[in-house]
Image (cartoon, rainbow, N blue to C red):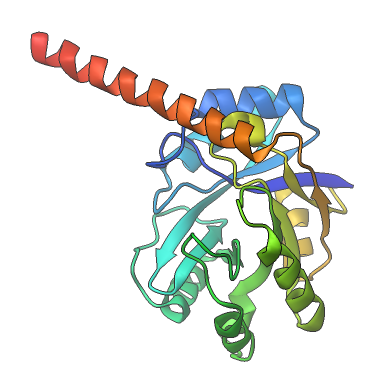
Length: 238
């Protein structure tokens, strides 16, 4: 059994705080994950960089993005290019399908974040084309402030033909691995097969309190913002 965290943000996301090297180093040294997905908001550059650097850390990387559809966020995985934001969910799924990727719905039905509703997921699963590319949904998202939607998502997944995924939704590196998806095998191909065949297992983990997570995110955001200001000031001075 190997484990993957399929929802991680880097500093390539506007709300991410950690550079790619820090993410890879922490994952290799402090977790039992063998695969991670970098899923920055409407961006692919961080994932492609992580894929390039990952072998140095003994890791494998799924190249992905958290795409802002007009009906909520969608994780597009195993892609090589950016997916346009703002399209309806169905059109986004078809776009990812043409790219040869697969999709997971993150934090379905969650409040206070842009989430696809369970009703909309049901509609997509009933469509022959959409259901081919919609491999799974998060039934555990460790980054939510209100976690009742995790239980609702789990109940929905058990009643429908869709794979179950657990993810950290990490925006600071020390949250990586708080949620993970287990699968039989060790390679990217075996992970994708497990997702598409709905043969995954979930791992939940809450090492930090909500207060610590928020405090850590705010601290890292402040550091990042300060560095950006100093960089701009230095450029203007020259």
